[in-house]
Length: 169
Image (tube, rainbow, N blue to C red; front, side, top):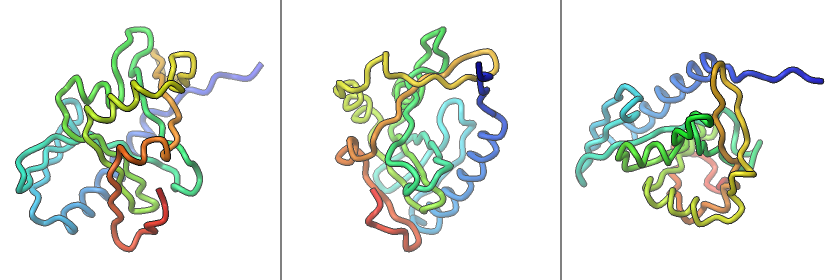
C-alpha cells in the first residue's frame, strides 16, 4: 500500500507568492492606467481600480506550462469535511468580481467574471461530486476538479503578455 501524499502547502504558497509578484509586474507594466493593490489574500488577492471602477480579483497561479496539461484545477471545497466553498465558489461568496488563472511560464492570464464561471461550472454535467479529486493537506482535505480549458474557453478572456504564444488556449 502506498503512502498518502500530503500537499506541501508552504511550498505551494511560496511558489504562488512569486507568481503573484510576476503577475503584478506584468499588469502594472501593461496596464499603467490601473491602480492595483495587493490585498491580504483572505478577503481578495487584489483590488484593481480601473477607468471602469474598482473590482476585486482572485488569482490562481499554475505551476505547470500550458503545454503540459489541457486542464486547470478548480477547487470546489477548501475543506471537504466542513463543505467550505473553495475556488470560484468561495470567491463568489466573498463578492470577488474576477477569477483569474495565471500561467507564469507562458505569460498568459485567463480571467472571467466569477459569477459567470460558477454558473458555467454548475451547468457542466461532467462535474459531479463523484468526480472530485481529493488533495490531502495537514488536518483537512481540499477537493476540486480537473477541468479541460477548452470546456471553459468561452467563459474566460485570455491575455497574452510579452509575446506569449497566442495559439495556446
